[in-house]
Length: 238
Image (cartoon, rainbow, N blue to C red; front, side, top):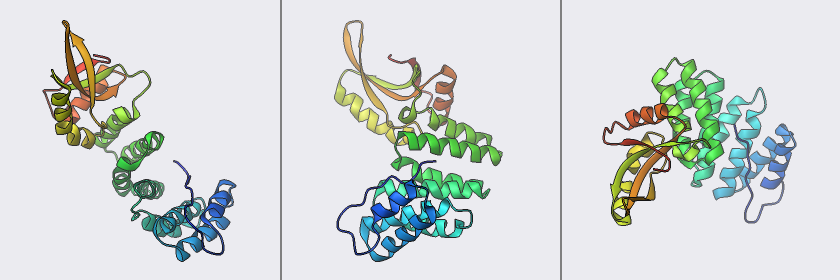
C-alpha cells in the first residue's frame, strides 16, 4: 500500500513540525516519526492536525505492537475535511483490518476510500480488496473489485474494449446522457463515463463510453455489473 506523502502548510507551532515527522518516517524512524506526529496533532488544528494524525497512524502501522494506536490515529484522520487525507486514512484502516483477518470490515474501508484516491492508490486498494474477498470466499466480491481494477480510472495500457451507453448528434446531448449514467458507472467501479467524438458515414457523432478493458470478456462482466442490457460492447476507439 502507499505511504504518507503529505506536505505541511501554514505556520508550525514550537516543537516538532509535520515535515520533521514525515522526514523521520521516510528514513524508517517510525517510533520517532509517530512521537513527533502525535505532538503536532495534539498542538494544532484543521488540516495540519488531520495530516499529523495520518502520519502518526502510518508510523504506528509500521511497528508490530502499535496496531491500536494506528487505528486510533487513522480513525481521526478519516474524519478530515481534506478528501485525500480522508481517503488515504480509510484505505489504511482497511489494510489494518485485512492484516487482522477482518475481511468484510477491510472492504468497507476500501469502498469509502476509493473515490478520493489517485490512479496508483486505486490499483493498490483494488488489489488489497481482491485479496480480502478471496480470503472471505466471496467470488462475487472478487469479480466486482476486478471490474474496478480494469475500469477507466485504472485502465490497462492494452485496453481495446469499452461500453457504449449512447450515440448523439450533439455534444450537449452526449454530455447530458453521460451525467445520467455517471452514478451507475461509478457504483460499478468503472469510473466516470467519457464523451468520444467519431464520424459515421460522413456524419459527426458524440459517443458516451464507460470503462476501458483489455478483453471482450471483461467488458461483458462490467456490463452485467451495471445491469443495463442497452450498453453496447465496442472496440476502442469506436
